[in-house]
Image (cartoon, rainbow, N blue to C red; front, side):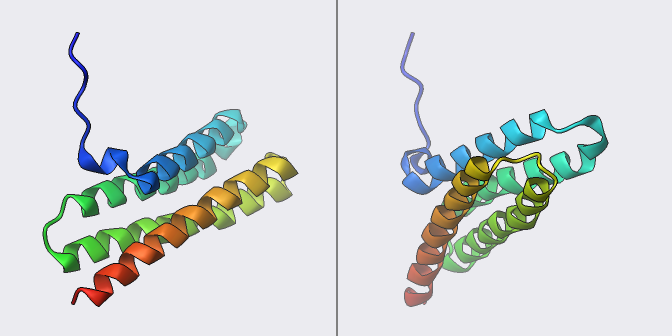
Length: 123
């Protein structure tokens, strides 16, 4: 069997970290009771949006397009914060889990901010 070819964005640290954030959020969503379907759905979509928009922006040629998708990815990461905070307050997320997820969100948003700032300098 041949080795699967990777897309260039799959080798970036930002993609790997954003994918880990999505995995962590999915684990939490899978533990939520059925009455929390909409919360789980929103958290899943927001966390996956970080990866998806980064990947889409990475594939764009124009700086303006890249910046737009990276900004959306950053916003989606921030969107996860109030959801995980509420789930923590409602005792669905433990203190140590909250700390880990918030750390992931912080790392991803810092990396995206750096990429956006780098694109700003290229204008």
